Length: 119
Image (cartoon, rainbow, N blue to C red):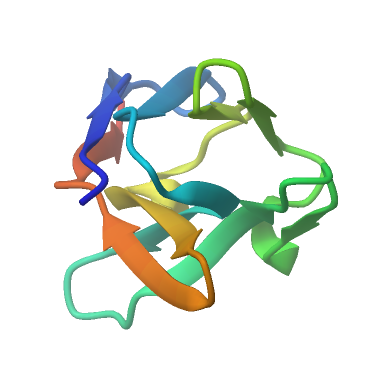
């Protein structure tokens, strides 16, 4: 198993910034892609950003130019820098890790961290 510990959520005013972190526990699994999903009340979960082990990234259109995903492979940690936040970004953000153990692939989820953008 890979344990994920998220941090960095909270309450911020519109236009503000937050940085989310997600640290994966050490394990025998190889960490492939890491990402962040979010789910707002009454809405479907959506992929916000994803980064591969090689550093390739993709973002949902609504956050392009405002959010930046990065990772520290030595620490098995993924970050999401969120700038110019708006109320539409309010959601529970979950870290997602795609891992493998040999030929077997796994997916692990964090417990989620609340991000609330409000004045």
